[in-house]
Length: 118
Image (cartoon, rainbow, N blue to C red; front, top):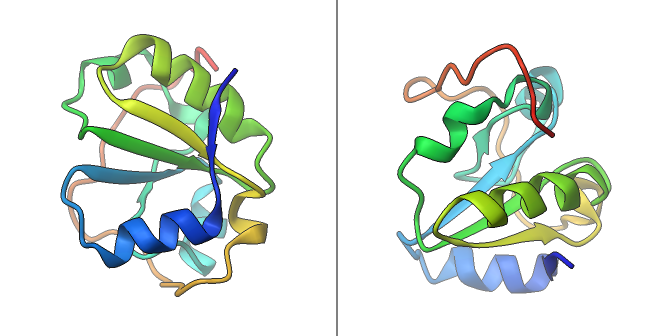
């Protein structure tokens, strides 16, 4: 069973400015561009390939999707394949009531391949 992080818990972790935390937003790029959790990285579920397991991950990863369902699947696979504490954002982006950024990342976007194991 995949651990879940509540929006309140994530807000607290982000406020601590923890460098050992990554928020991965698996929604499609247009949804991400319209609004996302500050500091999150857009890795759409449809583009995730096995290469994602070879990345260097921080100690903790929180996966966010639309409503908290797809993120559980992706979090489960990540948790089994990377050395990090991985959880799913309970309720997904729909439940997020913290700060929101819009736009896309200007650098560091990864090409993770055309196929998805998720």
